[in-house]
Length: 504
Image (cartoon, rainbow, N blue to C red; front, side):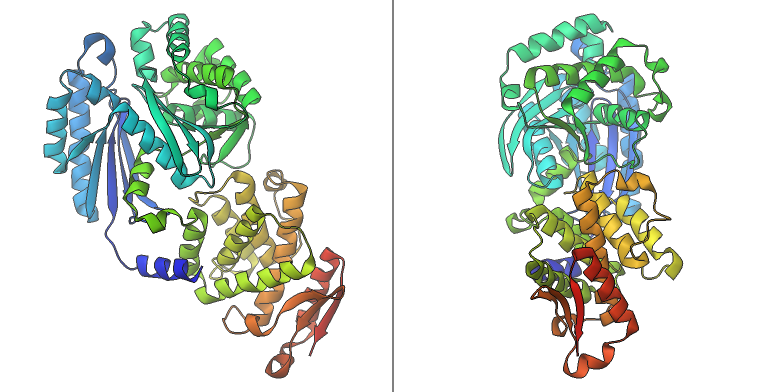
C-alpha cells in the first residue's frame, strides 16, 4: 500500500499528457490522458463520425468523402495535441484501413498529418488490445471479450491476465449494412454462418461477456434509460444475459424510431443499433453467458496498459485511482492510509465476515473518506456521494460504486437516510448497505478522534474485546474522551450489537 501511495504521489507531479488516436471504421477519436498510469484519467475526448468502413467490403476501397472527413479530423486533433502539450501520441488504425485497397495510401497520409507512426492493427492484434482493455478496467475478469466496431467484430477469451488467441469477423455494423444490402434478414444469415465456423463462443457458457464498442454502449444506454436505472455510468453496467436477449430482439424487430427513449442515442448511431443487436443476440444464444458486462475500456486503454511496466500492471486500478484522489483532495493523505490499518484491526476483532472484495472496497472507501472536506459542512455528504457515484473509476461494478458512495455519505451525515435518494440504495444488497452503514459509523469515530490528521489512530485502537466495543484512549490521548466521542461509539456499538466502552 505504501508503495502505491508513493508512486501516486510522485506520478501526480510528473509526466506529460499521453494521447491515442483511434482511426476506426465508423469514427475517428482522440483521447488525451492526464498521464500514463495504472488508472489513466481522460482530460479530453472527441470523436468525428467519418464512416470509413462504409462500402469497403463491396467496393474494396475507402470512400473519398469519408477519407476527407477523417483527414480533416486528424489535422484538428494534431493541433489540439500540440496545444495541450501531449508528450507521446499513439495512432491506431483498424478494419477499414486494413481491408481497403487504398488503405496503405490513407495510412501514409494519416502518419504525415499526425507526425507519428500509425499502427495498422491486424484482427488478432485488435482482439488482443481489446482484451487488455478489459484486463485494465475489470477486476479479475473472466469470460469472453467482444469488440464490435464499424467494420469488424473481435473475440478473445480472458481469464484474469491470461488472454486466449483472438479472432476477427467482418461483422461490424457498417460491414453488415454493406454486405447485406441493408437487409436484416440477410445480415442474420451472414452472422449465423460466420459463427458456425468458429469455437470461441464455446468458452462463454455461464461466464461473462464483455461488450466493447460504441454500438453496444449505445444499446446499453438505451436499455439503461428504458428501465429508469439510477446510475448513468456506462462502465460496469451489468445486465443478465436473458434480459439482454429479450431487449436486443426487441431492438431488431421494431422500427428504431418507435423505441422508448431512443432520443438518448445519437442519430448517427441509430441505423447501426439493429445490426449490433443482431450480433449480440447470436452471441447470447450460442455462447449462453450468464451476464453482459458493458465496458468503456477497449483498444486504446489496452494499448496504454501494455505500455506500463510489468510491476504497474498488477496494481489494483481502483486503489490506484482512489490513492490519487486521496493525495489530491484529502487534508492529510497519510491519514487515509492510517484509516485503512485502523479499520483492518477493527474488522478483524469483530468477527464480522468480510470477503476479499468487501475488504478491497473498504480500503478504497478509506482513501476517499476526506475528499469533500472543502465543501460546506451541510453538503459534504451529498457532494461526496455524487462525486464517487459518477467518478471515472475502473475496476469497479455499480454495486461497488454505490457502496463507496454510501459509506462516505454516512461518514459525513451520520446514519440519516431522510435526504438520501432511495434509488442509489437499490443498487446494493442488504449486506452491502449494512456494511456501508457500519463503515460510515467507524469513520465518524475515527475522524472526530483524529481531526483528519495522522498520528492518532495508531495509538487509539477501536476493537471488540470480550463482547464489548472498546476505544482505547490512554496516556496523553485521555483528554480526547468526551460526549461527542462517546455518542459516536454508542451509535457504532448499536449497529454491531455490542456494549460501548471508552477506556481512558
